[in-house]
Length: 149
Image (cartoon, rainbow, N blue to C red; front, side, top):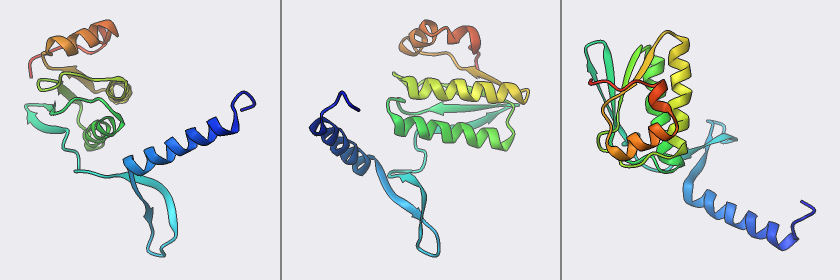
């Protein structure tokens, strides 16, 4: 902190406050109206994915690009729902997705590890060229096999 001027720190704090107001809704409140920890996102409930059971596999179709923290968290919530239901084989379909950033890649790797720990598997459906390029550059294609659902 010694390297930064007081004005620079105030500017960063001001930007952070604007970010919080734009991205987050109010804090959770208990019945006693005492503030509790946690924040909730503003917006629709998980409109980024749809799921479908095909045989013993569950296909999770990504309907939007995963390009920011909000869509990354919605993707995580969808994967968490499948994980808590006890699904063992998940196929991620990026058919309508053009871009996925570190938020989405991080969630895929997190749940790859979780599913592997319980004897489950994650696959990807055939990908378009932009998503394939991302997977190949990060060598995810070696870790997560591509299959037809």
